[in-house]
Image (cartoon, rainbow, N blue to C red; front, side, top):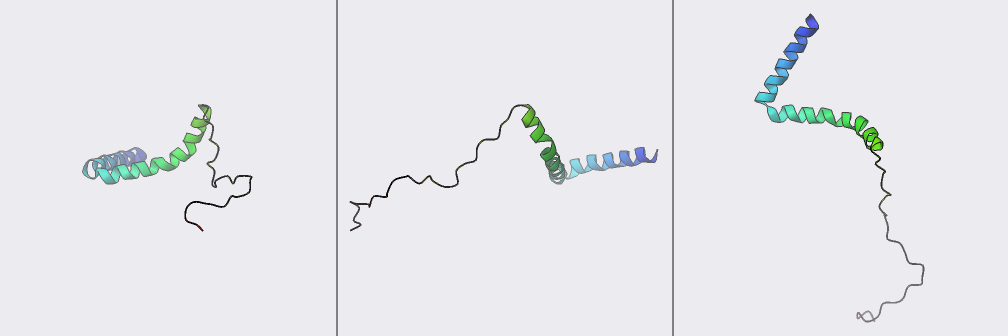
Length: 76
Protein backbone atom coordinates (compact mmCIF):
# COMPACT_ATOMS: atom_id res chain seq x y z
CA UNK A 1 0.00 0.00 0.00
CA UNK A 2 2.89 2.33 0.74
CA UNK A 3 4.26 2.02 -2.79
CA UNK A 4 0.86 2.96 -4.25
CA UNK A 5 0.71 5.99 -1.95
CA UNK A 6 4.19 7.16 -2.98
CA UNK A 7 3.34 6.63 -6.65
CA UNK A 8 0.20 8.73 -6.22
CA UNK A 9 2.19 11.52 -4.56
CA UNK A 10 4.82 11.40 -7.29
CA UNK A 11 2.16 11.57 -9.98
CA UNK A 12 0.49 14.55 -8.30
CA UNK A 13 3.84 16.31 -7.96
CA UNK A 14 4.68 15.77 -11.65
CA UNK A 15 1.21 16.92 -12.67
CA UNK A 16 1.59 20.09 -10.59
CA UNK A 17 5.05 20.78 -12.00
CA UNK A 18 3.78 20.33 -15.56
CA UNK A 19 1.12 22.92 -14.85
CA UNK A 20 3.16 25.45 -12.86
CA UNK A 21 6.58 25.13 -14.56
CA UNK A 22 6.02 23.54 -17.96
CA UNK A 23 9.38 24.57 -19.44
CA UNK A 24 11.39 22.84 -16.75
CA UNK A 25 9.10 19.81 -16.66
CA UNK A 26 9.18 19.17 -20.40
CA UNK A 27 12.92 19.88 -20.57
CA UNK A 28 13.45 17.09 -18.05
CA UNK A 29 11.09 14.79 -19.97
CA UNK A 30 12.93 15.39 -23.25
CA UNK A 31 16.27 14.97 -21.45
CA UNK A 32 15.16 11.59 -20.14
CA UNK A 33 13.87 10.44 -23.53
CA UNK A 34 17.26 11.12 -25.22
CA UNK A 35 19.22 8.21 -23.71
CA UNK A 36 16.24 5.93 -24.24
CA UNK A 37 16.24 6.79 -27.94
CA UNK A 38 19.95 5.88 -28.23
CA UNK A 39 19.02 2.33 -27.28
CA UNK A 40 15.73 1.95 -29.19
CA UNK A 41 16.11 3.84 -32.49
CA UNK A 42 19.01 1.92 -34.17
CA UNK A 43 17.23 -1.49 -34.06
CA UNK A 44 14.05 0.10 -35.39
CA UNK A 45 15.96 1.74 -38.26
CA UNK A 46 17.69 -1.55 -39.04
CA UNK A 47 14.38 -3.43 -39.10
CA UNK A 48 12.96 -0.87 -41.54
CA UNK A 49 15.87 -1.47 -43.93
CA UNK A 50 17.91 1.69 -43.35
CA UNK A 51 21.49 1.40 -44.53
CA UNK A 52 24.15 3.82 -43.37
CA UNK A 53 25.39 6.03 -46.22
CA UNK A 54 29.01 5.96 -47.29
CA UNK A 55 31.10 8.59 -45.51
CA UNK A 56 31.54 12.01 -47.05
CA UNK A 57 35.05 12.50 -48.51
CA UNK A 58 37.28 14.50 -46.19
CA UNK A 59 39.66 15.65 -48.97
CA UNK A 60 39.37 16.61 -52.59
CA UNK A 61 40.74 13.91 -54.93
CA UNK A 62 44.10 14.91 -56.40
CA UNK A 63 44.29 14.42 -60.19
CA UNK A 64 46.78 11.84 -61.49
CA UNK A 65 48.61 14.16 -63.88
CA UNK A 66 51.42 16.68 -63.56
CA UNK A 67 50.42 20.15 -62.51
CA UNK A 68 50.42 22.83 -65.18
CA UNK A 69 51.70 26.27 -64.27
CA UNK A 70 49.04 28.96 -64.11
CA UNK A 71 49.23 31.56 -66.88
CA UNK A 72 47.26 34.65 -67.71
CA UNK A 73 46.46 35.91 -64.25
CA UNK A 74 49.40 38.30 -63.82
CA UNK A 75 51.45 35.64 -62.06
CA UNK A 76 54.66 36.38 -64.00
